[in-house]
Length: 166
Image (cartoon, rainbow, N blue to C red; front, side, top):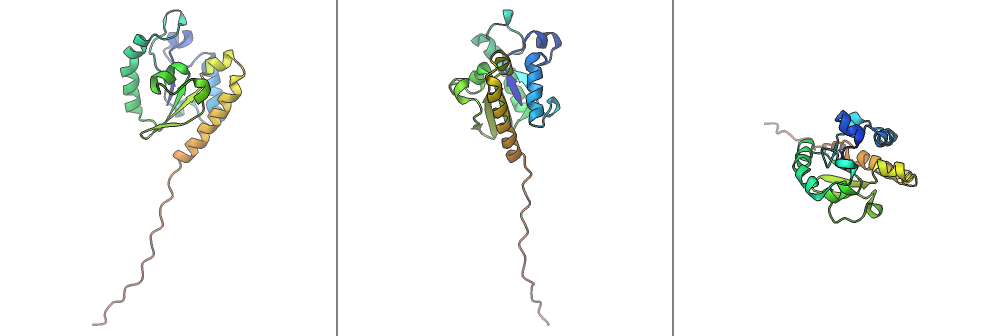
């Protein structure tokens, strides 16, 4: 599962998350780790675009929190990629700035949350692209480990049973 901040202009018009330039970068990052949009569920903390594309207000985030909580319950993901500081503050409050915690894994119950830079931030600051790529590579390694089918345990060999003659 991937959780972003809020719909941008293109997302608001099309009713689909990450369809603008940040979405194209997200698609590239997913392809880098052999995933596509069909393999993940993508949503946002806010369900509608804030006026003038400003940062979400706490009351707006709170008003949408029930929808995000239900999505998490219904999807029941093993891994949640948390894109950007606003999603980080909602899903992992108090964990610190995104610049310090990006690419780390925070396990809560049976879900691993991975804070990552938002693709839009990487488009504005090209130096973040390498960090984002490396963090996605860590996600692939983690998924390979978590989603690996457990090998069946070999059945113990039983000693032959001696049957009585009479």
